[in-house]
Amino acid sequence: MSKSQDTVPALRRAVRILDMVKASSRPPLAADVARQLDLPRSTVHGLLAVMVELGLLEKNASQGYRLGTRLLDWAGDVTEKRDLVTEFYHVLENRADLDAFTVTLTMLEGAEVVYVACRNSATALGASFRVGMRLPAIFTATGNAMLAGMDDTSFREWLALNPVSTWSEPLTPNGICSVTTLVREIAEIRDRGYAVDDEQVHEGLWCFAASVRDHSGQTVAGIGISLPQTELSRFTVAQLGNMAAGLAQAVSIRLGYRGERQDFS
Image (cartoon, rainbow, N blue to C red; front, side, top):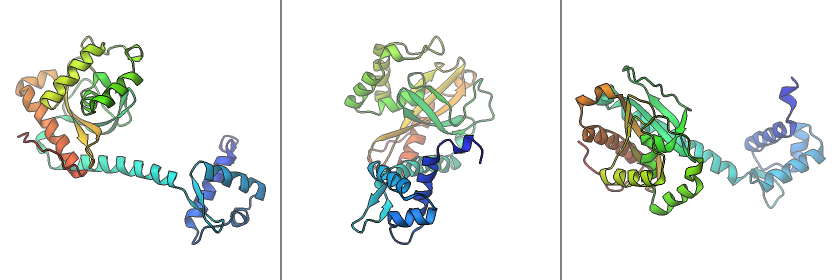
């Protein structure tokens, strides 16, 4: 084993313990863990105590150990994200009318959106989108769509956690740079049902987006369709906005959302 691989032996031992507990037919005792993993009992007792404290393991009445609920929380979060991406691509399979657009799926993380899925069009956009990319939320259509999808209390909390003094410099001359402008934009998005990035991320690039809701009605993502400014004349703003809103609604329905449905045809 290389030196770099052996810098966190406690973490490696903890993972080995989790694997063993998961594979055991009955909750193993501390002595079982020490014997099967060939570890000192003092080391095992210390690790088990910390893992129980952190919710990674639980101790039953017989002093045996089983996986803790914190792991279930993590697994659930991973599953939800995977389901979201799966349903995004499933809906796109039946939307040949969107082949000419770059279609993206983002999630809100603090003041940024992170791109979790993307289907690029063959049309040159002048900008590239890729999974894992991050951008300031206030400049993106998907970010503003998700902010508009919050209730007023949650939106105020977001503003308090991300004050204007922490905002990134605008990426183009069109970028939002004041709370007043953002609040006005959010109100307009709520009124029309979709968000518009009018060259805020990249000059010559437009994006139309709407928020995705889960079974509880919570906004969990934003879906955007992007096209170069030179292609805008082929559509009306309402047509493009309704395309994005219809796509977001289709994914929301597949996630179990049963709220008010609208006709975006």
